[in-house]
Image 1 (cartoon, rainbow, N blue to C red):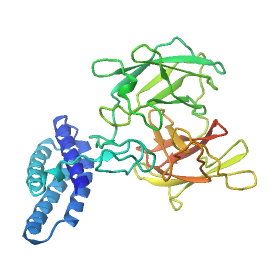
Image 2 (cartoon, one colour; image 1 turned 90 degrees about the horizontal axis):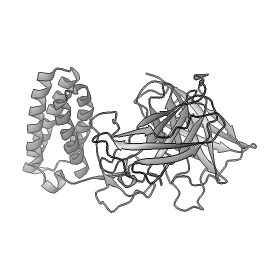
Image 3 (tube, one colour; image 1 turned 60 degrees about the horizontal axis):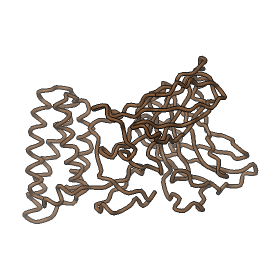
Image 4 (tube, rainbow, N blue to C red; image 1 turned 45 degrees about the horizontal axis):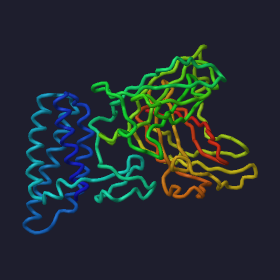
Length: 385
């Protein structure tokens, strides 16, 4: 019950915000989530006189949610506002039939592992062991970064030459420098830099360190391709608990190359091992906004399953994908057990839950660690509309 009401209250706050900002096209998503929660409450409504009254109120609430979703999808402002007012009244009436501690109970989730929901704030994630945070539901499908990053060094990237890069992190609202303590530790780090060249052929995963100057962080890396590189900073502010990806570009001394091929790639080889990516779709394409599962299997030259994956950033593997336009990135971790001790080993296979927001060509990189060395195995997939 508290989980369902937590969803309803979050979505209601989002609906009011979206109506004020006239972002009507985002409201139907909130209503889909709300209807799922209402159906759960209907299924678990008590019996007797109180139950009868509760069921009647929930039925009216479901009808109000459906009406608001319909009106907002038509982008008709006046009808949406009227439906939103009616739905809010129905929600308040229904909430009055439940104990206040159920309606307003906080729910805690893991910033990285999807599907983890707990009522006890002291509980840690059963998958990765991270401390749970108060669950949030964003008002829109795309989380706009609250942080801006800009390069502060004069380094111009040259193929094959190590470069020291300094980045300045500031809060967009007010321009105040971002202190590292204001960012959540996610998979052992506060900042993950996902760096890719213009051709999507050279991927780097780096973790910058504070320089002592407020808001400034530094790293070194060696580009293996000519041209500019784009940095996606994977960060989760403590204040919001929402993962976001502020972006900046590093200039190159020479012109880079465009993406050479849009062919799909499902097999990769590295250091004598074979990596095979299988999409569990029964032969159907992978569509945007439709979650699917994928499995990566690892074997040696003789086909023997490999079980020597070492822990890296709190997992046995990381899957990062870049769209061809370099405007969107995805960062996913395997489902199931994660390492608890440095001596733990993983393999020979692991599963990902894969869901992306739009169609297009994506270059994927599976990052693992073997013998203390990070390995990056490239794959590629074309996402259908």
